[in-house]
View 1 (cartoon, rainbow over the protein chains, first blue to last red):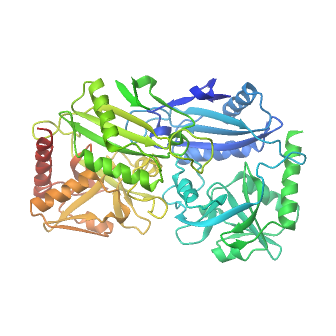
View 2: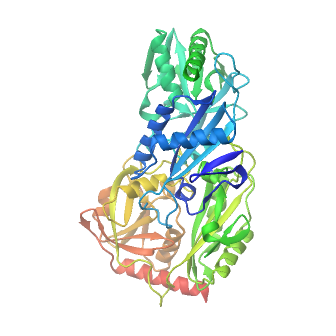
View 3: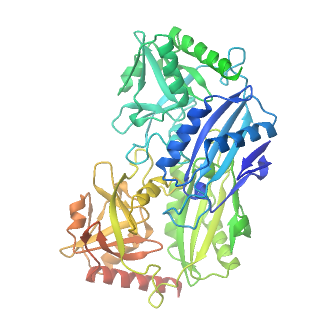
Length: 282
Length: 282
């Protein structure tokens, strides 16, 4: 495997960043997780736009443009002869003197990749079974402390949430007020009386798959409500699923001891998602 | 300059960590900032203990022992022929597969250093003048989201706070309830009517210099009060100062437009701190 680091393709086991890079020192970096299907990165423009917003939120005065990043992703996939893949693109503020106050951004771009199943209507899912989840005690970092729309290398909040699990697949975090926010690496949706629900954007990461699912719900005339919800809203749901770039649409079998599962609405959205994937790369 | 990375001394410009290291991917690492005076690391045991608590909070099931870390620090100082120095010791969870949920810790230890003025009673301060500070809008990450006693590579909260500054030296953060917490890289103290005050530990990093200042206040019979304080408590102070390992005890000239300055209590504590430094290394 070869990774793309600072403009060069290098063997994965030699791919490294300086210990003076702020991406290492402070997690001072934004990133995106992408998925390529048949050689095409799904919803590239959305990912590129979110990454740009992340780097703006971090005050980067300079950042690589979307076309440049896309080319590095293309080169990385080509170098590894990969068409169906996971890709992670990181942009750090660069190596600087050892002061917390940042100097002008001198971005380091890192692209790593690994093979994934093909997906779409004829491929397989990345996961073997519906997800199990647990509501953890670790609370999501509030937007006043770190903007919730920024996807950064400061990911310990999610790591601590995952460490609370007892074998489940995903940790669900509440905000500091106790309302349901999101999974450590996913957004959460549920269906009740035919209405799809998901927490509003104020305190969750604006997932790209979340956005696609909202578009699909509109296409399929599935009513959608966003708002602020406590845990009972989820526990009393008829169906529930998690979304992220890797899992796509993954039903939730149970949350803690409460069985939920997928269902007809989840299935329709998951099938429609697979069709979007096919449409995007052929 | 040579740095200590993964057990080896390497030239600073070649010192790097794998892009698969969780310290890079997620900021999944703890660190300490140390100061060596005349070749002796000041309050090593306190720093080693805090680092161990940080790594415990992050759920590291394995971590280098304090003696091993101290030896790496010693080797780094010796390799660079440094006696008076800044030292940063980081311990990451190591390079792992690309999953957020961590596997067993396989720590990467990184030690970097740079020269600093000698300090103590006969040396000079690192800073040229008393600090200017500003209370920023970015709020400190609450302990429910990340334990406040953990000093980690998730430092974007402090970076964002510093980015709000307009030339001041330090950003002061409030907690989400609006109470004064700490500086981006410092603890804050102030004196009012002869009583020294500092925010209680619940939502601030337990600074080693903060601890030493508390000991010195007890030695000097300066009454100390800790608690929850709003901004007016600081703005109405007779004296104020910031503490951290690098700055030691640094008077605060102004907070926003409010002039404060050091004074007799600050001076006594700063002098006593310098004497501690001398006592520690001779």
